View 1 (cartoon, rainbow, N blue to C red):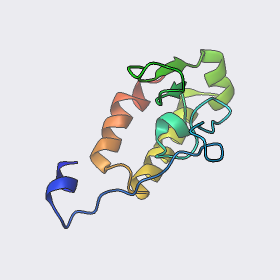
View 2 (view 1 turned 30 degrees about the vertical axis):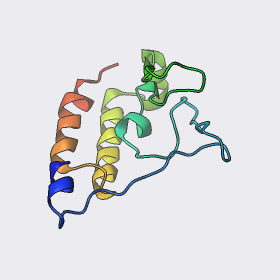
View 3 (view 1 turned 180 degrees about the horizontal axis):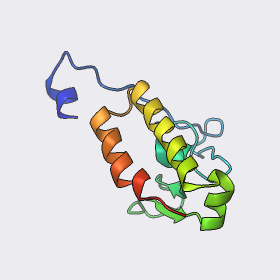
View 4 (view 1 turned 90 degrees about the horizontal axis):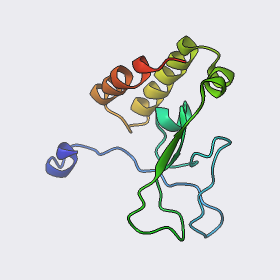
Amino acid sequence: MEKWTKDPLFIPPPSAILKTVGDSDEIVRDLHGNALGGVRTIHTDVPLARLVAATPKGRPNWYWGSEWPFHAKKLKDLYFSTAIYRQRAGQALRECIDAGFLLDADAETLRRETVEKVSF
């Protein structure tokens, strides 16, 4: 991020907008309850949990979101094995890099600190 703010020749990654219902601020969600649109990551494209990062209407302004991890049965239903999950997560990381949303070094950190620690 420092390069994006200090180096005028460095091109920042593209932005992406969350999908909403019509003109409202109600976010459209996938079958897991995760937001559609926006910047996609392994956490949304190869989910291990339901993530809510936006403050829903009627919640206090200090509400920053939550995460509901999937049970092992759901993970097995989705991915069949840890190996298949890791393969799909690797593909999702590559797509994030190719789209300009993730740097190689950050993808490696995500792989090492998230993907490689998953087991079910």
